[in-house]
Amino acid sequence: MSPDRVQLFGCPFDALRLAEAVDLVARWVDGDRLRQGCGVNVDQLVKMDGDPAFAATVNACDLITADGMPLVWASRLLGRGLPERLPAIDLFEALLPRCAREGWPIYLLGAERAVVDEAAARLVRGTPGLRIAGQRDGWFALEDEAAIAEEVASSGARLLFVGISSPKKEEFVARNRRRLGEVRFVLGVGGAFDIAAGRARRAPPWLGRMGLEWAFRLAQEPRRLAKRYLVDDAAFLRLLARELVSRQS
Image (cartoon, rainbow, N blue to C red):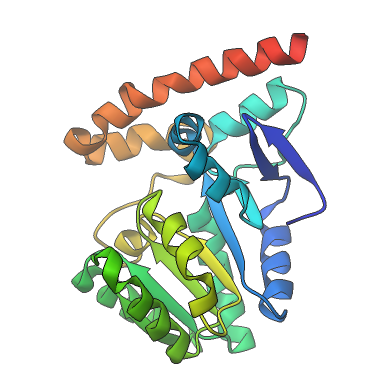
């Protein structure tokens, strides 16, 4: 974890900018044990509030960043200001040239097979020197986890990027940490492989800075995301109100 952590909604966030996070991960990759990072968004915070086991798994991560402007704004309102939003996909993209320069092999786990294969091909073309030790889709049963973790280990990868939904990706890492061999950093990257493969688009940066990236995603996948953004995530207002009352008392 970084020296500076900010407690928000029962979750410890690292108060880092992107360049600082990249340097921190680089030190970990040269270390002697596995570290785990995750970007926490409003949806995950709401899930954590109702699922203590999931909350404990996330809180155990070595690097936790704020994936969205609403969390940054909330941190400032509560007097615990985070310096910037730091989505996991931004960290993923910033780490790729560092991996190419340092010669660290990476492994991509998640999405559909055609998607992760195309993502790997495009990432290699777009990042000269990048070594992808292997890739695999994210559709597997619980009984297959050990074999998949051992496959990652045998690839020689130093960084593992996991494009699987929460809490499955956090649970996979928690159950298989000791099987991952020389992997020194694991990061959950959400839908990064779909974007890398050209199957989905990210919101323009200015929308992200305005806290409206969710609206862009909702416009692309209204049937899948409507309930999440318009119903489930409304519970964040309850969490914020509770935090404000706790701070005043």
